[in-house]
Length: 265
Image 1 (cartoon, helix red, strand yellow):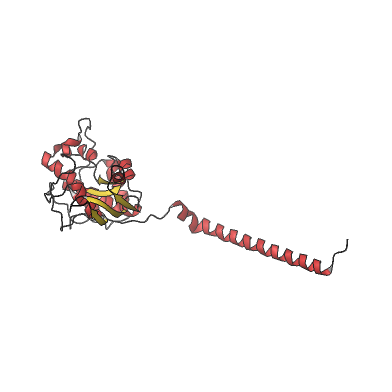
Image 2 (cartoon, helix red, strand yellow):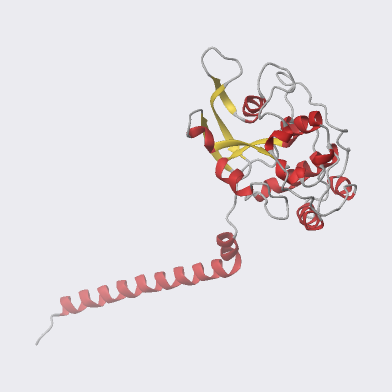
């Protein structure tokens, strides 16, 4: 079979083009491999989580201070942690939510219950229900525990997406000194803005009554503030920590040794 010179040249051209494509693919694969085995594998293993590194405590435009057992110690969170007593857990079989008073009281007597105060403090673009200057109907939040933007809408089901978390859980507090507080002090503890954060509902449910040894926010950028806030609350209400809890707190604060305690200021 005779092949013309033109057909031969076209075949050669197609062959060179095919080889060029293969070379480009090989170069791309090599480059991808170099990236993965240097920085890429770490980026894949540790996805960046955006979100706030701290959350406000007090807004004097509509909130009034809650009186704790004693003031939060000023200065280093690590130093405050060293000032906390270390003990084992007390029994929990006699724990009842009612020991901390009725849920979401207006303890600062500003005319709004605590839950709405915290929603108003932590959300942006807040809209109140019609005829109210207190009851939050909707808003937006850059949620601190998971580091994602979340919309809040009041409703029988939708309200569960954003819950108000006790930074030091009531059940944890009960086992670490709160049984020795007065009823009024426990009521203040449960409604103190220092101990409350608007948070992702599923994350809050996962945390339950856990301490730093058993649960930390997924958003690593927030952990220093979160642990410092737990320390501040425990110091302010004369609560103690367990040894595993203290160890977990120290591990977090090792990454931010200049972290200070959290106060209303």
